[in-house]
Length: 126
Image 1 (tube, rainbow, N blue to C red):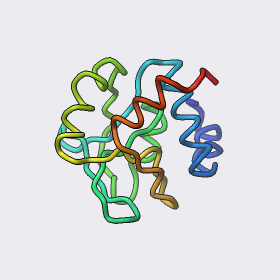
Image 2: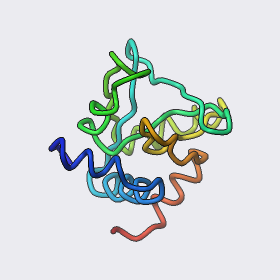
Image 3: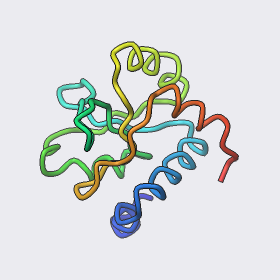
Image 4: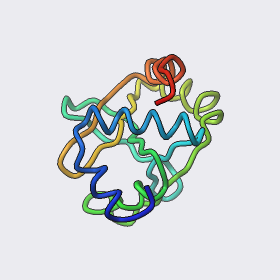
């Protein structure tokens, strides 16, 4: 997923396929990536005006997405263990969703943090 052409093909996929690929990559690498400004994760609104934290499968994809409104933002890689133990409880408490793999053309799939972790842990490896 490091080459620009591969990333462009990935970004062009449907919301559902991008979600599945993110799950597959997180299962494989045991990490995921947020986007940050000044070291803090960005909060975005989904298509229903609900607030959430966007997630991507890798630093390379996140760097590619750091354009337009996210210009100047930086990838914030997180291990799955850190995400599960520290971020999921905080995000849930704050009422924030996870916005999975948004692109310039699509806001991505929004899910509750606990639901995402449950899906991640129960889906078979792809």
